[in-house]
Length: 521
Ligand SMILES: Nc1ncnc2c1ncn2[C@@H]1O[C@H](COP(=O)(O)OP(=O)(O)OP(=O)(O)O)[C@@H](O)[C@H]1O
Image (cartoon, rainbow, N blue to C red; front, side, top):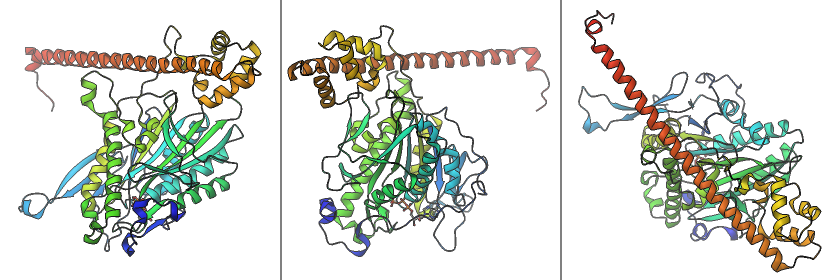
């Protein structure tokens, strides 16, 4: 396993503070608090109507004595205030000592909240959604040492338990676990010797982990053991902020495939523990001279920047103004490609993403906390809503083809008979068939034809299908653009109507009888 450690991490004999490890030792304390006992938590209202839920999680301060809190939130905990200390030189006796900054979220969990409360209100409702074919991502994002692993590992444990108790045989459950380390290296956390693992888009445009170990599991205990084993393989290192700091982005995909409906798209629960962002101030003079530490920091911050760019594109009002569909730059890093479904503006699968923005309450971390909360806040206050794709009127988009329509096409363009066509299709519809890899599809056709179709003929049919799929992706993109433009026109119409209504009110107020009337205020 050590031999597979990335070169940057192996180069130097590690000093104590910079030791590279695989595995965290900071096992979170088990959930002991009653689900609704937290004093800072009024019941948050949970809605699946929006495709993002944004939560703030503020960890306790580890300073002694505990300083007065700089991050506060009162019921219903949807508004959070961060008090940024002013520098002493800017202070006169009359100026306030802090600048307040206010942020919005679906709920803010203060240091005395239990992770189990957060889980019950925001993650547990995702489990039936995933078992019915939804795509959910739970993403922990924040500064190094702010509590991402702490929160996510407990949520994972609770989610696994709910998943198995809710699954009454309707789904078979499998898992994949990867980490993204350094610039773009992807490790299979179930098999570190696997050098072939790849994050890519399949022909249908969905992000896949190809050639990654996929384990089918049949019980919560088995899954917990597998995930704990995978998690323990992660690259960690002692840093100034955290003795077991994660140096990679870890992604666990739990895939729920229907056992009864071959055409349903598998549900996915994706748990993402990002490496923490770091600032120059997080480095001691000795760690600043450690090239491994510095290149890790650069790689972590660079990939987090690509994530921020995706968030910005998903929220930027400027993009909405110029009328074109916002470009979300997924392909700029492995991390954002892996999270494509979470941020995409349209998806053929219902999607819900929970972003847990973690922050430290300490004055020294205020700049980093402000940065984290600012990005997360934008997903609540100004997100572009996801667009649901509709079939084209001419029925040319293969992603909407039924099994019958697909069978008719295959019978027309191959020498296969009706029965043989059904053997190839195995009950699939266009959306499902489009995701079959080339090798598997060619093998199916060769076998079903009983040798009647040679390699060349099989390839020709595949090529025709491939062209149709690509054309359908273009059609989807066009449908997306026209839906987006319609949305923008509707927005302008609403704004114009609002202006006209305001003018009406102003005119009314200028009428002499109203203008001279006594006011009660
Ligand atoms: N809500 C919390 N309550 C109590 N302790 C916490 C809480 N959140 C975090 N901690 C503790 O803070 C320390 C840092 O947490 P954690 O390792 O989860 O941070 P992280 O954000 O994953 O850091 P990194 O990005 O460096 O990996 C750990 O010792 C953890 O046990």
